[in-house]
Length: 133
Image (cartoon, rainbow, N blue to C red; front, top):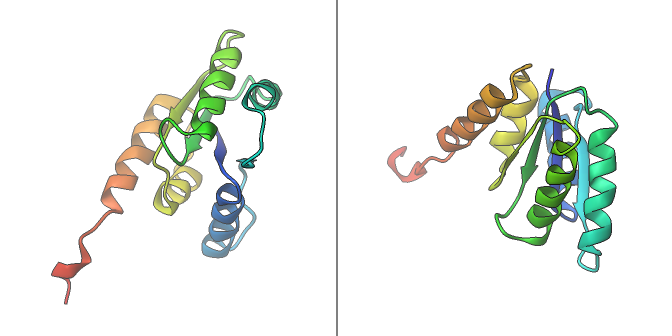
């Protein structure tokens, strides 16, 4: 089964984990890597790569909040370091709670399929509610 990691602006990852626990009724199996405002991106990239490599045999889906922001850049560098050592992983940005829940409830061995399932789940979760009076 693929592992899920949240790399986000602090405290968003921890908040998503708490929300997932609330909705699912059990402690979710995921890694939270919240990035503080004063973080050293180079140091955190290496630390995250080590965390990812601790479970290198498992494919990993990394979810970030904002494309191009510091947590994304940290995740991207860590992912590069980890994949150079043979790890299989995917990185998706724009994470919302629907994506986190989809990733946790649809975990699959195939990281390509999981990545696409989570991306599509996020799109289905965005609804213009004005039309539902």
